[in-house]
Length: 181
Image 1: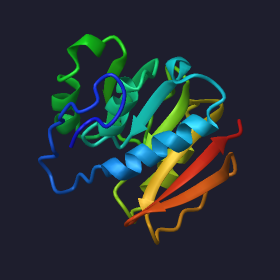
Image 2: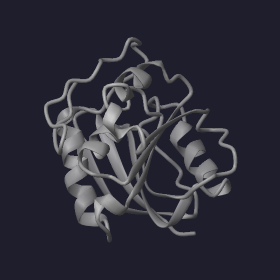
Image 3: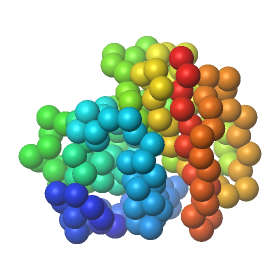
Image 4: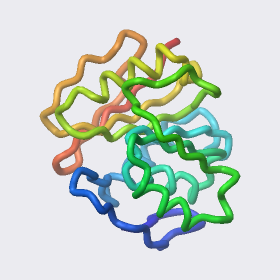
């Protein structure tokens, strides 16, 4: 695993220690960032990014490499992502790690402009996390939510979210949603 773009392009990351962690492929990550740039109404340097079900932290660290204002990584098990975050000592003021269950979030302390989530496939966790993000007020109005699911996985989107794009990459489908507060 490695960073594929931005200031830290080519930087190697630690691979997951657990077979329960399934990082987003380099190809899919690159495609998602290309789409993200086209959907954002502001510069990446103005974006507060939230990475839910962070796993290794690769997506958020890619965003840091590409100049995101801040990145918050949320996972119930932070061991893999903590090793990768430690590879970015010069960015510690832009990166924060929260050890939380994304399906039982506390009230938000700040609002996020972009959310990426890649929950374990076929467990209904993405739907629960989307509900929690809304209920606990973690999202800015018009926040862009990127949800990776298994290619045949079904999701019932909460009413506050509007599907604006959908893509397939190998075994994954990626939904692009807008949060309508």
